[in-house]
Length: 162
Image 1 (cartoon, rainbow, N blue to C red):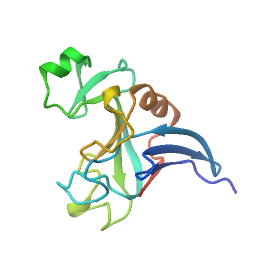
Image 2: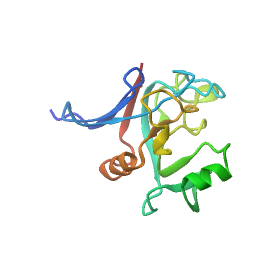
Image 3: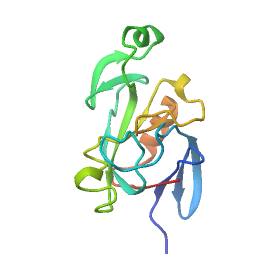
Image 4: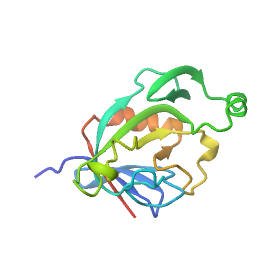
């Protein structure tokens, strides 16, 4: 029996692996939450457990496209733009919006991953230093999130664990 492909996100290793037919086909570095693992709304933690990609956002947008509220702003990230808006939590290139699959753990109520707007997304590449730095999302290099976006389909399962 062939198993369904899924994404495996290791918080402790700060990596995301694409798993197909029980084999790792590609591994990417990521940056998860500075506050660690956790599911509560407002915690700024990365939620654990089983999720799925509920939406793929940004198809056709240029590399380093800036998103606010899941919409492209028309801006392209640059150091000058970063200096102009120093308080922005940059969401760049593509968004893979996560939905929890485990009621009471990461779905519904105060622990709902989708309602928390937790994504896998691009960030300024210089922020990818191997350490957890996000506000709950899973950050990736822009070229990597583009490659991942093009490789997977909406609905693929995602397992996030310590």
